[in-house]
Length: 374
Image (cartoon, rainbow, N blue to C red; front, side, top):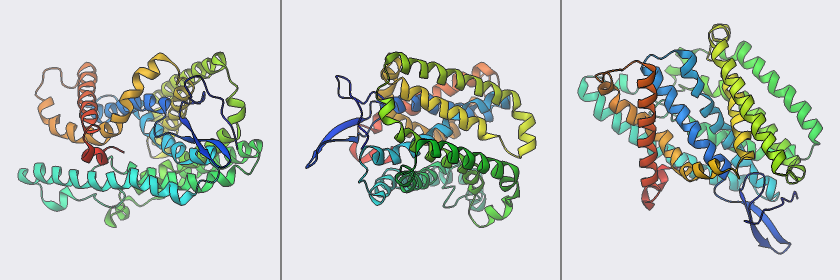
């Protein structure tokens, strides 16, 4: 079993996410419920998602809107990492137990939020004259009752696949995982972007209640790449545990530079590649999300990381609730001077995000409401 060196505070130097447990075999480590680096990264990733949705309805340039899409990619990568990391620290972990934990964490909130949004949309749209079939046009098992709820069942499936796959992949050498994982992931991106996504019959998907299936297909290469990536990380834990502060700092700098360059390329090539691949070319968002995750996992001891991390527990609620806040105020926002400008879009994004996070912090303190925050 890979052992991780700990600092004086008892935290794994890789991400600050492990704690010791005892067994008949002696001390063993298991992941704790929070990961400092991921909690900090989740704060700004959620802000990016809120920016996408807020900027879109205000007619901002698509090249600017799309720069927040890395947030969804980060959430997918985090879901894979969190589901698989138990196998890295405790190889005897059963995938069935992981699946049950992920179901409680993701599917119960999914059902609850579907109910909340169903009530919200019916109570706001039906009195305005919208018929029920229009309100529920896209509702289904993959879509839920709001555009962004698709992520919860998708994250559950991705996590279960990771839990089933990573223990088997750990049996292979790191070199084999890098070679095969790279080829499989690239091949899947080529297949999805070159044929599968464009071949989907969107009308049929909607007619059978599987709206958002296209989104699942679009993100499949990222999940596969993430699963191989976590396995490679697991094979490298012993080496990573010996990294000093300077080595981690270099990883932070390289990750940040990679993130910025990917975001710049995404905005620059969006229109040309979007027309070529029939979609929003989320490959760039996927790469940016990976750089974002690596940067914050390496920077978990940084002062800014530790300042942001306490907000991490509230950002999942912020992600799930922000669409309701946005839909509640978007009509009023149009009446405010400056609506449609870049500055107004930024200010309204920050306002919606701050309100959603504040509500998340309140919900986390009310025991019976905690099911609303995965």
